Length: 330
Image 1 (cartoon, rainbow, N blue to C red):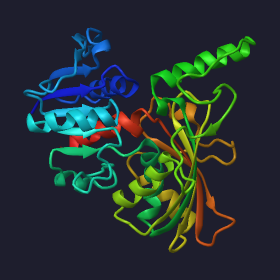
Image 2 (cartoon, rainbow, N blue to C red; image 1 turned 120 degrees about the horizontal axis):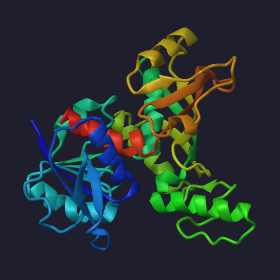
Image 3 (cartoon, rainbow, N blue to C red; image 1 turned 180 degrees about the vertical axis):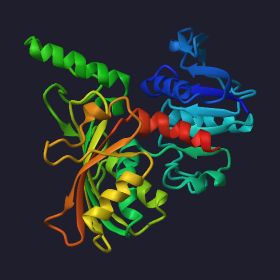
C-alpha cells in the first residue's frame, strides 16, 4: 500500500535527509508534499528522479495526507500538527514539542516498537543524543538491568542545523586564513574549539539537552527511577555525534556475552579493534545508518560498570532514519 506523505521543514538539514532516506529505503510513497516557510516556498527538490516544488506551509496543507513528517522546530509542530491530525494524517514529529506528553509515544523502533500502536495521531522522535545513547546501551540492558548511566556527549554541528554546519566551515576557513569571524548560528567560536551545549541552563545546572536525555530515557525504557548523569558538549565536527558512556549494571556479564549481544543487535555495529586502536569515529558513522559501538571494557571505577564509546549520524539514526523506521512500522 502506497501512502500520501508530507514533509514539514523539507529544506532543512533533517528534511533533506528525510528525502534521501525515503528514497533509499523505497518507502511506498504515492504522493509527496514538501512544506516549508514562505521564504523557502518555490524551491525545487528531487525525489526518485522527479522534481517537486516546495510549498508554503498552511493549516490546509494536509488534505489527503496519510503520514506527515515534521522537522521544523517545536513551535511549528505545536501550531500545525493538530491541523494534520484533524485532516487524517499520522504525525511523526522530530521536535521536542510532544516528547514528554503522556499521550504521545516516544519511539525508537529497535527498542520500544510496541509503543507505536498506542498513538492518537502523533508519534514523537526522541532527541538525537538520547537515540544514540539508548541504541548503544540496549544490548547491555537485554543482558541485565541498568542502574545508572554517566554520559558525556561530543555533539556535531549537524545537531544545530544546516546553518551551524555552514558556520563551522566558514569559521574554520577564516581561522586558517587569519581572518576575524563573528559567530551567528552558535554563541561561541566554533573552529578549533568546543563548548557546553548551546541550550539554556536551568537552576539545577543541567542544560535542556541534558534534561532531554534524562527524561526521555526514563520514558522510552519505562524506567522512572533510572539515574542518568549527562554532560553535553558541542565539538567542531560537521556530522555524527559521539558519546562516552559508563553504565552501572545490576550484574556484570562476561565480556564474551557483551560482545555477542552487540553483534546480534539490529542497528548497532561493533567497532572494537584493540590491536589496531580502531574504535568508533564520527567520520566513519557519517552518512551511515548503524550506531557504531566500541571501546567496550569493564569500568575501573564502578563495580559492575561497563564503559563504551559510541558514534551515530545525527541526521540519520538520530533523526530522519528513526522517523522513517517509525513510519515503516505503522
